[in-house]
Image (cartoon, rainbow, N blue to C red; front, side, top):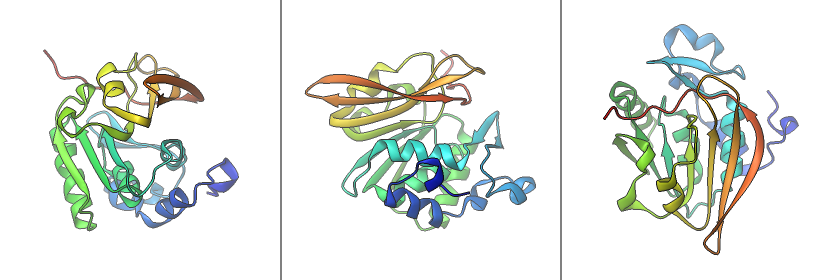
Length: 199
């Protein structure tokens, strides 16, 4: 697909999308669909997002090569790889251990050395590594997690879907400017529900 026709203009994002081999992140049965612009199942009720949405969310982060990024929801590791192509360091959290282990193996086999991995509840972010210039959430929560907003650096960008599970959600970008949070609506999306640790 032509990303530029769909509004993806950031040259770093276009380069990363062209470089990262999406077929390495999909299940064997779905290899023939690896480069289609559609989400695909990766097991455990989770999906790898469609390439356009990955590109859009990455573009909204406005990444620089000096940025430190927090990703909540490693999933297959595909979005992680796109982030790692552009940012200085990526901190990624996944709550489902088998997905986390598989993503780490894939990303390390592709040679990425600027990614830190954690298994846990991403709602609380990664406090000891904060603040982050950019935060991305790849599953839909019914609200904007307040710990993530607090871990955003001054001038930082938080991109996430917000809305009810298994329904249409809104893709928001939160900008932190002079200690104030500004919200931008970037249209309708559909993501898998945000998984929390059972108390």
